Image (cartoon, rainbow over all chains, first blue to last red; front, side, top):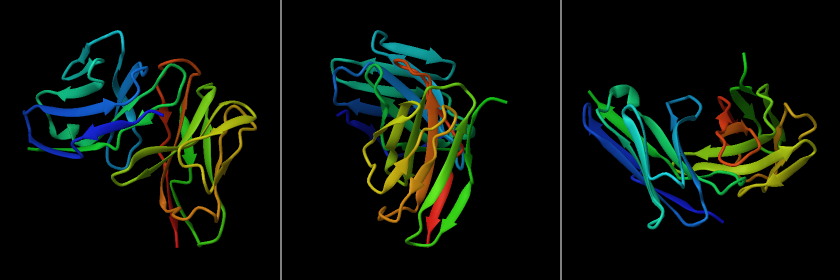
Length: 111
Length: 113
């Protein structure tokens, strides 16, 4: 089955810096790559996703890039703010299959 | 108010007892899922269901059971056979289709003493 590796497990940045979280996947047939944000004590929520026919997608301060050849995708957050502090999960799936999640990255943005 | 609701938020049980976690959704989603979240382990799939009266094992189904008698409901029973039941449990639902967003409940924290 699919295996998703996520790095780093923790990431500390200063407010205003950029943050990058990277994920790799094992199954080259995977074609959907969402990112979820989970604030402390709350439910995970989708923040951005990308499909395999697209190399990059942006939404204000967040962007996701996909390299199908290398089987990795990354989340980029620019101009980080304290409210960006949370656990971020990447995931991958193939068509109608269930999502396989990475182990998460705890992002801490210090004022 | 549409959404997916889990209850209770906190649950305590004695070792050796079965316990059932509730998950209800009014989003008209066909697919429902149960995940277990442990620190540093991400979200691991326990069971999922794509249609009423049918469900499939996920990666860590041992010691758990589910039922899907209604489209809106997908309860999870943590049995006494589950060796490490203390965890945070998340229920999710989605449309039945390729590349669809999963919506999560607020979770149930189960503590077995």
